[in-house]
Length: 430
Image 1 (spheres, rainbow, N blue to C red):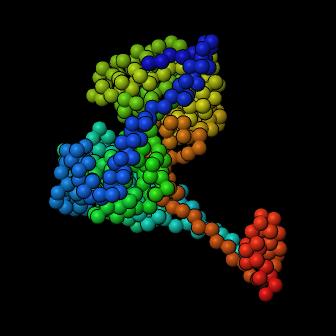
Image 2 (cartoon, helix red, strand yellow):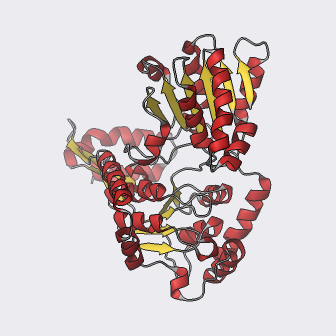
Image 3 (cartoon, rainbow, N blue to C red):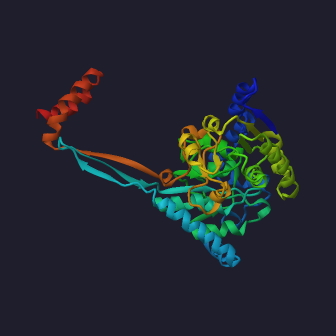
């Protein structure tokens, strides 16, 4: 774990190194993914079967080996413990309500020149949703991806999810039932992304692929962007906790480890103006780790990527936060609004001591699929808009063309495009 202090002579260099640190795929991953993508593109289902047997130890032989039916999803939902079913339903309800408010409105208006202008929003026809398996089998991720797609109006929802050793997470199936997923395919990794992009004999291609995954999944999405749309290229999870010394050190330690347990490459950072509190948190992280079932992963993350930054005043924190542009920023102070007002780059912000980031992972409502790796400088979290596209439209009558046409002709001629100019001129002087 790295300790930094903004008053130290070497802080600027050390902090810049932290900002530039890449915890994502390397050249070897990129090469491997390129080979996998090309294999799936050329051999389709045969490539999927070979790669699934190799990586997931699951044979794709019969139809039941390939896909999971809606009946199985319904059975998994009905079999849930009532409290867990109620929790899943609450999460779905809140996610749906939040995302329904994101639906954009169409525009249709006529300006003072008599030109009808506007834009119409339509959903993509089909969306592919990647749901991790293995270490990360999360029903919450399925809800966060599928519900915005349904709210957008996507007609065909396709889930791909690895089932290592043939094991299926019943909670994922229950979430798929609740979200109204149409297809679930038992394939994962870069090969699943390639199948969604190009299509195979069994799996029809989609228009947009969303959802988190490992480095191979992220790299496959990066390489296939343009063949399909994607939500983002997501890397390991991140949390930045900005806290004063009036917090409970146990709470803060738990907050930091809530992201560290995701992945050995995840990063947890604490910024505080109280060195005594910093020491307490560092100590309590060790205590929490000793009790944590996910301690092996969380320890690797904290030991290699964990950071505590001491500042003279929390007024310095927003500048640090904006440079880091973290996935999650937690403002554990009595009055978080001034800090929030100064933070411009963050995937999602959690305000106040009683708002742990983990509440946003499940039931708050906003999407938990968020930009990582400083991409919050230019990207946003998953939303309804990721499943929609805007088509503009224009309508002119003779009077409107007479008002605008001469200027358009002048610009076309200035650009050396006479055919452009003529297509307008023939209508101005028939």
